[in-house]
Length: 341
Image 1 (cartoon, rainbow, N blue to C red):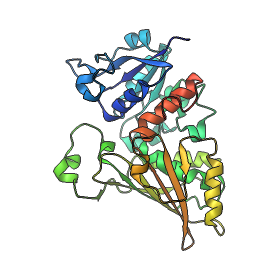
Image 2: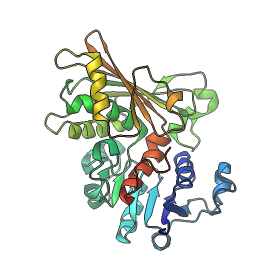
Image 3: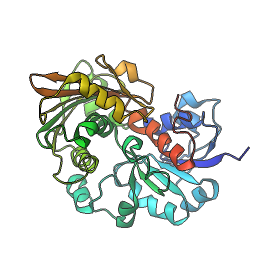
Image 4: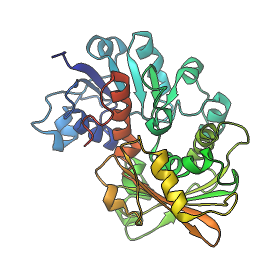
């Protein structure tokens, strides 16, 4: 039996990092050998995440590319936006393959990144080398990649919900409306006023209307899924709902031709027939059905001549840590489902 592959979790203090470590502890082919944190006291992982007590004996350490490369062949970056591009080149120069959970490598155009994130992209070479890490659409490109741009939670639900319709030319490419809701953990673990319990409990609110950073990412990947040509343009409106976890996207699109509901559902089942973590269902999905799993549940309806797609997933798993492990599995040549059921 081959020795487990060493993996590093760079930025181990957040919610997605905790989920990632919990999944990796079940993985037969890997071992978490490095965890980094910017906290000065270098705490143990089970001090940051008490749920990991007696499950892993590892202390966090400051990031050092040489030390990571000595003990890990793969690194997951669970860092804030703009922080990943500061460490990715040093890891790749040392032969470490990177799965980046931030948005730093998801947009192929550096100027678009700067326009939406307000920060110049400092690693154009990495930006060009990155493969978008949504296995359902880019399964063939992922295994050979040295840098994976792991998709976000809103984007995963939105793209998976729309890709079959765009790929088959069944909807107009502009005027697509995505009304999406997220649980509070999607905002991360750092305290913020808007996600403070008294502020968000028993309240529903929209935010970043017309300027959310996932918008160009959704446009870009759906345009690619549609074979290029006329750009896809979505109107994406996110909302914060008072629950711990989950993404729910209700998507409205104008059909090309006369849609038949049964045929659309069969299209989704065919399109995702080789995708073990997409469930095309008859009934209306709910966030509790996909919570704590790596599944994305999707259904489709025809309402007054419009196509309505409903998609939901767990923002911390299928929207972050779970799909990251899917990508690792493809890079390792392991079954895509390893450690995810």
